[in-house]
Length: 280
Image (cartoon, rainbow, N blue to C red; front, top):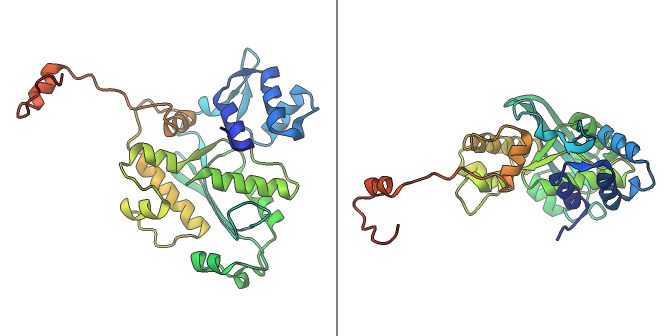
């Protein structure tokens, strides 16, 4: 069951390529704001809003993360702090932090408080951010526009990406701005594929992996921690991972580690002290 429009959107991305008519039919069912537009207009507007699409030679729509190598892809690691986590009607972003990475090098950073007249006590206790710290901060509309420019056409990456991506995108829509359409990728999903642990929270992995970023629940610091987790995880990727889409697919379990062919003779050689019996 796909819970929201973003789940449906990324499920559509996973099913590309599609012919233009089928693609646009699906898009208008997900995003009502595109209903009534000509197909060519839908595609151009979406690409203009950093959707990761391109037209193939046989005039289909496909996703460009398949054709760009991981080294050439720009990844934007993002984290937000908010006054509430349920939805944009009950909570507001109070801090956005992000860093852009290409070929394992940080090429730019973004950090901004967001004005809010009130910060709940539990959020103050968690983040250390008070309303006094926000009184001269830019308002949410300005910060969202600036962040959108910073993000550009990067792949949006976060630890539990659906929260940060959806909250920022819903905030954009709430303030009359186009929602996010960028490709996205989750470091929680990646860590579950390569790190043998029952826990994969940011704070746990920060300590367990020896990252030891001593600032937590602040946007840029947490974005940096998610990047460090990513770097460690990429040390264990299968050799077949070449594109950004390969990485996304691997994190979702659509690409697996290659199976090792082990003969009975080889297994017996390395397990001679065990009684194999009928196990083989």
